[in-house]
Amino acid sequence: MSYAARTTRYQGSIMVDICDLYLIGRKLEQDGLVINLTMEYYQQEVIEQPYAQDLLQKCGIASLVGDRIVKQALDLRLAKEASVRKISGVPFLMIYKFRHM
Image (tube, rainbow, N blue to C red):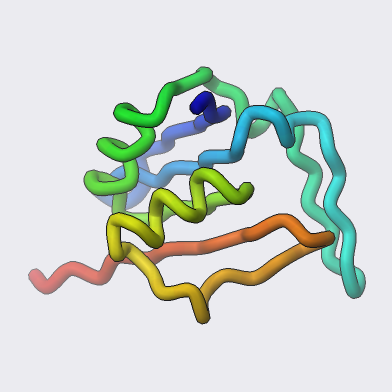
């Protein structure tokens, strides 16, 4: 499985945006919310499932769009099904990992 991914350093941790590759170029709209899944934003690189899993485990913040990547996060127990929102029928999940200092 291939994904479009973007990684950014943010306040000492890694922030990732990962989208199922087949969704790139789509515009999701629902109830006034619009998400443009552009190549320019999401596709900093194309990654495969093992690296996506590694990023999900290491990141502090994740924004995930698509059936496959959201399922992977749920399978890793990084979130619960109740946290998944569907926008135009496409799963969307935000994950924030709180760390104690």
